[in-house]
Amino acid sequence: MRFVIQRVQEASVTVEGKCVGKIGKGFLVLIGIEDTDTEEIADKMVAKLIGLRIFADENDKTNLSLMDVQGQLLMISQFTLYADCKKGNRPSFVKAGKPDLANRLYEYICEKCRQQVDVVEKGIFGADMKVSLLNDGPFTILLDSEEILHR
Image (cartoon, rainbow, N blue to C red; front, side):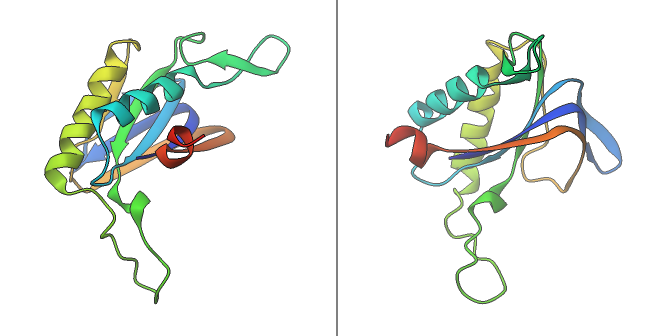
């Protein structure tokens, strides 16, 4: 499982010209799922996401978490996070999770986040989404379950 986390001042997602999700200060999270991912892995990834201290405190040090700043989440499914670009110029996506599993885990992740975060918006799984953001920093973090689970 992979999360690309962007600290944002605001972000939104539009499908077919209609805004389906919009947040203020918080994280835009792009979520990639592979076939070996499970709810247990998702739980660990969500815990790490929620606990990340990447917001500035009163001394301008990154000591505050999403909860500390009453941050919001915009969750976007993105199978392209598992693109394999080793051969040729056209990426292969065979490592990306099958749609049924990926959608189920995406919904599970969003629900787990809602248990701790007041505002959790999301895109539409499998849709052609247009994502807009005002990156804060910019500050972008890549969380990969391979690194989190195998320390």
